[in-house]
Image (cartoon, rainbow, N blue to C red; front, side, top):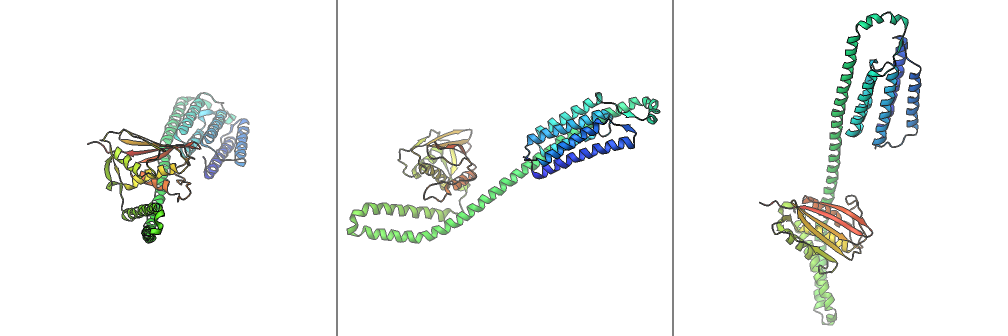
Length: 410
């Protein structure tokens, strides 16, 4: 899509070509005594009117629209030179201007088409053109000019070959440079995005560590109260519920202990090397209600398929599966396969669906969630050189694909 700056450049570029045509007509009639046909000014007038019309009613140009407009420019210039002597006109180099603009703005495929079209037009102008009329004073030297017709023909061929070489070089060099610039801009944007994500992770790690220390005291207090109630004979009928509460408190304390022990120090390389089956088994034991009939884990891997894992990677997959369970899904299917040193996991559910733009809004909509589970899962998977993407997401459910690299066999 063309920017406002590119549209302004395109407008003034056409004005430059129009001004050049008018000056060429004036110089031909006043300095060189060459009579250009009136059709030349009519053609230039229509070209100017089209340029003004495009500017007044301008909108966002797509690359295809710019390409079509540049083809129109080459066609108009070709007709102008057709009426003014063809390839013998010394200003046929104007045909290279659309090529330069295309090489700096459009993709290479468009630039090469415009280059080929310009070379074709230039080549046709050598054979097809309207001879220009000269004054009688200039006709007296015609015989002398005929003696040098061979040299002039060589001059035309030289100009034609020079135009071809210069057009190809411009298309090749400038298009290549612009392609590299766009690629570097994309890499810079990705680096800035990654830096923003890392800063967010650092802030989350700091908050997590602080919160873990702050939550330790109230959890210890709750645990003491639960033990007091368990020792109270009058509360015996509530012992079952109190035991559940005590187990949940211990689970919270265990999670907080892991946070304080690993925050800021966990690295993918420091993880364990386990088989794929062991890794998936760790995931299954950590899932909420792992015995639920809602979860179907399909796995059949060789024991020599291994990968690097740690607790954060296991927790990342657990978060994704738990989000599926908490999005009204009645069934979650986890299929896995190993192929070409890549472990591929397909997690499908029939829940409410997920935003397909996974990188833009990695948040869940569960009632008591913080909306950070998917973001952290995505970041953790990428830290292990893996990828995660949405295959489909609608009201009938979500299908995610996760790829993790396997360790090469020795």
